[in-house]
Length: 415
Image 1: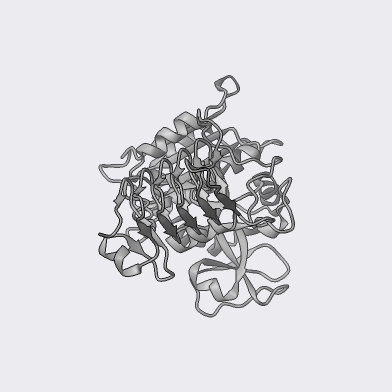
Image 2 (image 1 turned 90 degrees about the vertical axis):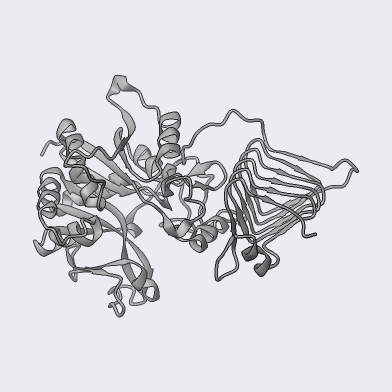
């Protein structure tokens, strides 16, 4: 391997995101807006770019139009330096079939690796919220001598049945066993109440990755999954190492948000991740200038906060308000407001997430709700107040009481 190995980045962005419906009714999961002006995929690509990677492909499949458009409009690199971020749709290079798993996505996109001829391939997911310096993980991978390295994040042992859990050989980083959603795992030696959960981020020696996915492609009973099939392949050969996210020191991070990682695969976890953004000392800090999260720069005016037509003042507490939005004599609390949203006189919005161009008219109330793009809540109407009423309107309401309103809906006041 060269002294300075050539690195190639692959972002797996083909996720359907059924558990985020209706937010994924018209878009792939990585294209779901987050934090006002971002898309979920911006976190993955920003981490790679901030880590110094400049050759990145995004493998897409499910309802990918808005995701492809976002990547093409946002992630423009200098071709003079052979730098690029590009989306690559499923191409059916191995027959008339779509991707049958994340490992199959790489197998069917093998031409990308062969054309680039990297020494090492970094493979990451596209729908988690976190900061990570992959150069530090890369250094650990090379130093370990492993052919594959899996990033692990410490999670409470009580949540182990939600993740792929990494069992490590005592006194080393070698993975002894990869446990898929175990019921009774052992805790870590230095933290018995915690386990190492897979983050869905991997580093492979290129030749080893090619060998693994090609061998997996020949197994008809395989699920062709990176975590469920490819990682165990390396574990069984004694060639897999773990990288503990606790060791990752991202510039500008604080003790409060260091090692933050959220899987936002459900409505509840998506909602909770937004709540992590808005406290005075946020659990995840969007304002880290040393490790920025990049996204599309909208041609928009600043957010505006005004009195209403009668001169009544509004209040905005513990909230994020994006460019182009106008808050006029309304009360806004613990909420995240997307670009070009409008909240009118006397409206009350609390513990909610509004997407682009949502409009809350005068006197309306929105509480513990997620409103997709261009939703209109008419004057005096309510969302998130009456569970049965929301269900009768066809909205999704989670067990924890979060109401989700699909794109373009219009909500009228009860007669």
